[in-house]
Length: 278
Image 1 (cartoon, rainbow, N blue to C red):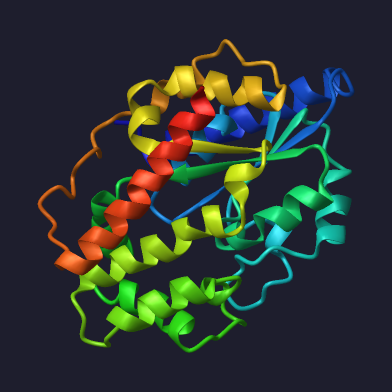
Image 2 (image 1 turned 45 degrees about the vertical axis):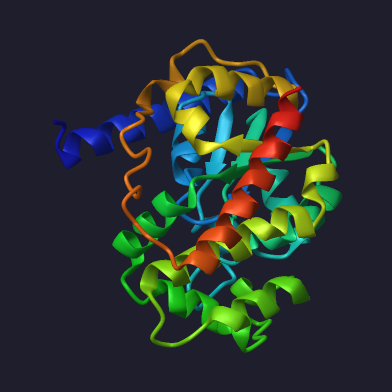
């Protein structure tokens, strides 16, 4: 396994190579913008890492120049005008942004940036719940739901949440609730946005199922490039993907009512996903 120094050297080399490549090929193609959105722990970071491997991309993670005005956690996007100004400096044909906490603002991002598309990643709820708790702690689900219950619209978690979703979460919420139930309800809240914001009706939004993507990453990466009108690089950028995380949460049990709730939304997402493929 490579040590940190070698990984850092590879990253610097790749970054410099991209700068040279883009300076030579500047203005050869119309610039596109791709926003990677969805629920946390659904493969969005994996998607960003894949696209970073393309010499024709400039990628922005959750903390970047685009979030410089967020002095609290550094993850909220700057104003649309400031983003546009930053994008104007970039020579890359494809700008990739992962503004995960702005998923609820996807329509506004797409409306403002006419040359943009979005990929909405979705993943099995059990796997997301397990991954969320491992990554953020046993209280993460309750902490994520609390702003929604309190209608704290200064918190990204509660922005643009529909009355139906808020009432549903309020029905089951308790400070001492099962951590996995809480994580499942947060998955429900975030993925409900896909339909509540009518993203399923927007041809510039690509729905991507995690479980399919990690099994055939090149196929689905190539499809995304085709849909956004970008040339696919023949450099094996999707070779970093593995499918080891599929169904890791299969033994997690939700309470019956919450299990039914998330299963209904999962089926709805998969129906929209299949319809998009046809």
